Image (cartoon, rainbow, N blue to C red):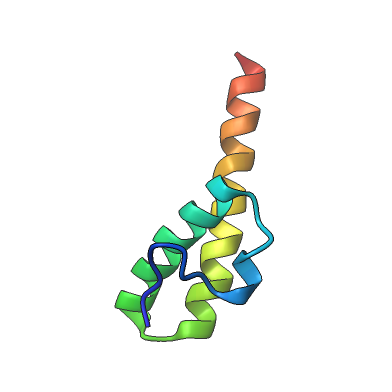
Length: 62
């Protein structure tokens, strides 16, 4: 089941908005390619956190 418009997996509800939105975007793509909801949720959150950590590091190095 794809997630959208405030319909997030329960593990995303307490995440900051930008991480939650990015994680949902990634999770939906993983879900489309694998069909595995559990994998999609975990991968989405992990990759979203990595994305913003990398972005933060990039900005602090400038």
